[in-house]
Length: 479
Image 1 (tube, one colour):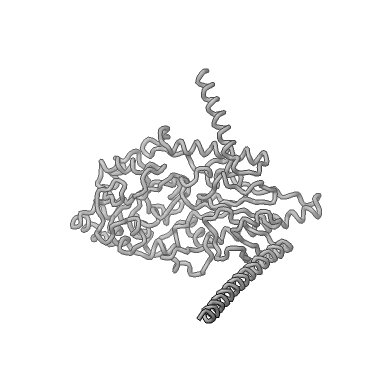
Image 2 (cartoon, rainbow, N blue to C red):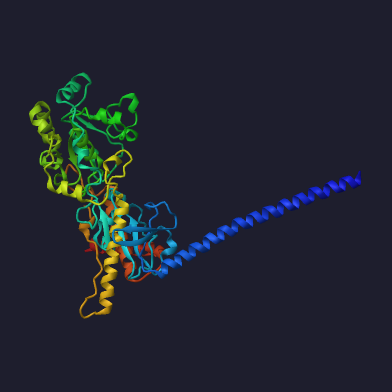
């Protein structure tokens, strides 16, 4: 029996040893293939290094418009570049463009040291409130190429929420008789307001609250809430893209379309959605919004009125005069869009909508605006590289091309102010944020001027500047 037990034990041990050996071998194979893949990746990097194609590095990680995690060849007409989000390429000699997503820019995480070969490229289509650093000229001047909502930027996204001209015109407004009936049978106010993002630098709620003293407003969001949505549309923030929600709010004559921040050309779906639905937007946001409207009579600008009371009186007048009200919807008629700037911009832009709900408007299958900007940068870098080569061949005939540099017109937005008084609110944290980011911008600029290599030093430079500001303030007070 003991002999049989010993034999059985040997078999178990032999099997166990075999399985361990097999497991180790399999892990070795796995590690082998991983090693091969890694080696091939390094070979690929070396291959790129030997070529002359520029590499574009997406530094901020929120955006990378390609599925590959490593590096992607992009074709931009007659030029090519490589695109990557791998920071390991920062020191590669072919890395020429560093792309930043504005919202994600962190002064403590900058690609330093900045070399003469690195062209910084800014992409920012979102609200100014996301990063007021970008509203200060000495900071925006750090960028060589820009893509923002402002028309002055190198690659503009001003019309990002106009998916096509047809988006504005093809959906017809609800018949005026039906709208008037809803005012009576459904208890609709003439105006609707749907906001759930409170405490924003446009201080929009303060204006709407004052307006409510002079005219009824149905407010469905959590801000100034006074009316509930139908049960099937309980959360307006989640319902914005639903057809049922769009059908519901299309029944209103007017939409209060107030942006969360005020800046030239910063216009969002808050303005474009009512135009699409056939409601008249009462707008507060970009002072230049009229420049982008379908015609010269399709929007009511809050800034055109001296007070909320005066605006309320005008809305009441239109509410009671169908003929005058309908003039604001003339752009829905055939050939109703007369704005040349709007038509040329939308038709000639080389990017298309990639919104999942409105992608069907992108009939030419154009790239999204992320890839569009990427190609813009690629072309600009090739252009400068070629000019530098010509200069090296014959400096006397070909002057050295100066680097491009952005200025405040590319994104700079004003300090937050009250829509009621038109003046700054010094006690507001938005005023503090705006001024404080100016100090941060000063710190970054000074740090770069001194050629610092450690971005964490930003905080040290910032605190030194704050101390100087405090001392200057005390000295001024003593005087």
